[in-house]
Length: 99
Image (cartoon, rainbow, N blue to C red; front, side):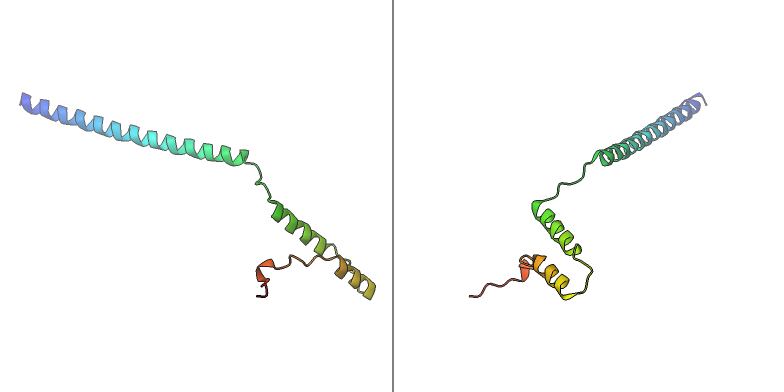
């Protein structure tokens, strides 16, 4: 009977150690996940606005100039708006050179 008690106590201690290792491993991975989430929030809050290329800036300027046309509907105002609108780069991907 004495041997039986020793083996059952040994198996209980082994089971407790295994459960403790599983719990500690879970806490470790949970802590890593929380730390990564905090780092992601920190990086997102410190992120700067992306730089705008010269081409995008030119397109924005052209769009702003198109929006700045007058709302008058007399012939002189329409002609003035038409003359002030830059249409050279309106659709460069559709331009086909004659061969």
